[in-house]
Length: 330
Image (cartoon, rainbow, N blue to C red; front, side, top):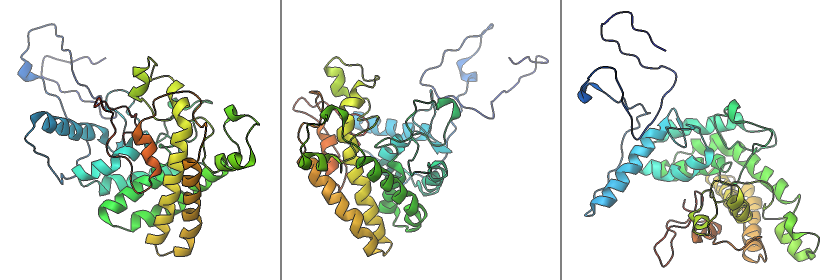
């Protein structure tokens, strides 16, 4: 509560929090002019590097919305949304970093963030799903790591290298990348999905033990394909259905990235093992059988993640519907 001492104009602005909004409702005990109300935009302000203008106004508006969404979520750290959690979900920035660097020069902003991820990285190499870690969001059931989210420690520095060709971002994060991929390898070789039981022959078991397709995951978060089937996208049902595929695909992507980083840094011998491992994972995935427990429309963009040269750029159907979730659409 704020109590004014007199009838003089008073400006009150919080110093340690912010609240994003799309609409605001204003109430007052006396008449006021709307012109007297001012919304303050606060954000990190990296310089703009590109603009988009087309012959289609809705496309231009969509791009402007993307830029404004980026501005709203770039305040000291990259966040998932400016109006609710305002948390640094790593999967969101992992997906958006390449696009963000097309819109503005994100070097100073983005190169500092992996240092935060390294600081929060667990001893076994797992990278948190939210950075900086928010104690109030942690619980005994919180995921210590998740495919697509924890992979930000490898894929964000690689995206910055692709955009700016500055080897320092790879040098700074190389060890953390290797620790995360080693963590994936250990988890992959420890078990196969429970639903497969003990009926696997040795060849199939060996393939599953390369793919990192076990454990709790977020999967292809918020995939609209589930909504079309009447499922609630907020529940963990869809992540469970997609997680075996998504985890395996990010496993090969990050493993391949570690090999490329070693080559860029002039350590060709260090690239041999992860490069070979990535090829084995890709082959195991291509020969998978009975991997997804239930019948669900898995977006084409998710499957395309196995093509390690790049993530899928567009995902759709003959009905021109986007069916991928957060990671599939990336």
